[in-house]
Image (cartoon, rainbow, N blue to C red):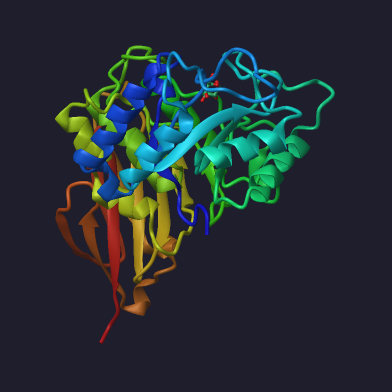
Length: 377
Ligand code: GLA
């Protein structure tokens, strides 16, 4: 099955924009393997916009030979030889967002071309879509085109949340759908995207995932979407949010320059395990106080429940009290069930609790907990 779980990988756009080439993509591929990302599940290496010539040749998309001298098939072979998968980019309109040729009216031949190159993932954007066109139908057409190739190609639709894609992208063949406008590398950006999606993730399930956009973790204001950067605590919060809500985890930073603190964030196994849990359930919102404090829960495999507290209030001076009554998890005190709590970020054993759990979290801090149910003898 394609996209049984949220896709994980790396994409060129957030840091490199149009400054991409074969050597760069190979270097990122090498980092993903040699630095251990692949072993954690990051598997798609995705080239975003700006890879082709400015015009089609004989009706076909052609990789710019100045940037990709050996062509896309050779690059795909390299990525596959490292045990990874190859992602590319096109668009439902007449031109891509950066003005390159796009797949409107060429869906079946472009899909065939991508399959011949060995593409495993197609991000499909929404710029320059004809006013007379039918957006839902255009995504359906590319879904059909990709299926017709006989190759397993993950269809990553990207229409920025237009026309409420959570309601129709699954039925129209997408394996993920961008539900928001573009992320930028600053705290307001990731927090706004999170707030816009907190009540919009219940449709997450095997085969199709709400994509809240690529990660900015560790970018520190550098690169194509840089606007000042975030603190390390904010990057950790952003990652914890994306992981908990079931978004694809697609890294956007330059892996060659990632500092140890943010690498540790992207390597946080406890958070990745929640995102990739075998039961593949979406989370549910337990409680929130205005747009500053959010409490989520998510049923996990193995009689476990994940609980997350997010404090978004950077401007506050003091820590916030957060907590959860186990009643809100369907566990009433007369059941005799206790919860063994482990901090998913630090791995710390927090002990065994009955009825409720409470703690304090600093501005921009997140507390994510895995609760193992202990049943009475
Ligand atoms: C749109 C998408 C981005 C990126 C750019 C490329 O803005 O939302 O993620 O793909 O186009 O031009």
